[in-house]
Image 1 (cartoon, rainbow, N blue to C red):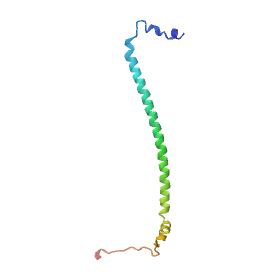
Image 2 (image 1 turned 30 degrees about the vertical axis):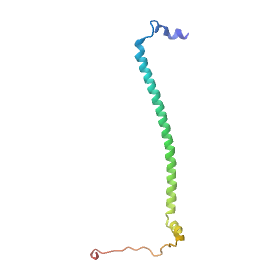
Image 3 (image 1 turned 90 degrees about the vertical axis):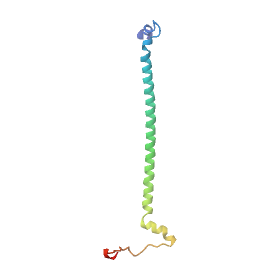
Image 4 (image 1 turned 45 degrees about the vertical axis):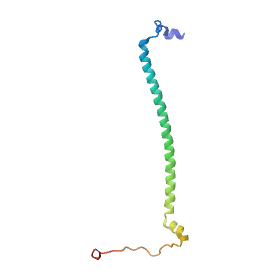
Length: 104
């Protein structure tokens, strides 16, 4: 039944039709390129997704470290951490030294 529908026998009555060989080879080449390109794009998409997850993890780590740094650099935390070394917080506010132009 399939032979009657497609009638492939008429192509091979005189042997293998060499005139269609370049078209078959070209089509085969294009199909191989298409399959290779599809595999390459899928691999690239997987790598991009993996890198997005890694970037999100690094962003979360950065935010955590930044918050820890901001907390540990507060004046009260610094004074508490160095109190055991004998360093005390100054009770006298800083003052500005002003030198007039004619003095130097």
